[in-house]
Image (cartoon, rainbow, N blue to C red; front, side, top):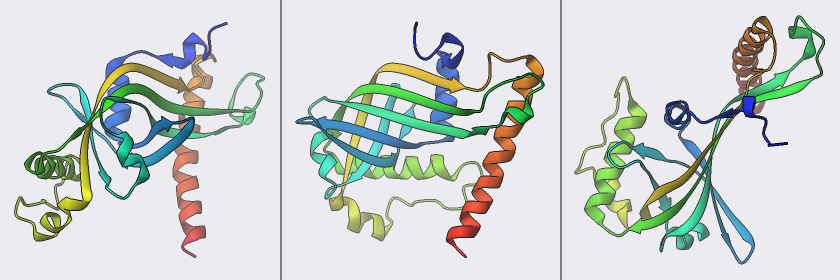
Amino acid sequence: MKYPPKHHQDNSKSNLLEVIKTYPLATLISVKDNQPFITHLPLIYRETDGKLIGHIDIYNPQTKLLQDNNEVTIIFSGPQCYISPSIYTTTQLPTWNYVKVHLKGSVKAIENKEALKESLIKMTEFLEAPEHKYILEVDNPRMEANLEYIKLFEITIDSWEGKFKLSQDKKTIDTANAKAELIRASQESIQVFLDTIFN
């Protein structure tokens, strides 16, 4: 049996890109000598050539692995929550619904300060959309002072995999109920969590 089941796979590139653009904070995984190196950072999809663009602190131990076409695994995480059988109109077991995008690719360091500046500006522009309340200017002195401590890299994507577990195998009304629960539970859990840790 293929895993995950076909109804929990999404091969629509437009759907996968929607996850990447909406939830750009990625989990970036490299492996050296059987030891995983993991960093959480935003990655932006560049439409012109279909590559992912990112920046990393030079003191991060994973930085040395983000070059020379080394292989990486990237995970983008969308919404997720526990689904209680109580929301269904049919008899079910408890489960967990989630949206994930798994990518594999090869990474290359870009050793060009002007390209680094341009990518920092473009990433900020993307993340500030649609209001654009802040604009990172090309002559920003704080950016200039930190360029020596930031590495630019790009990832060529070799494989795409969407894992969308959203109760697609249930009755239409139950799938709709699961969607509503995902929205409700996600919003509520964020509020409760933040109220707890910032109490």
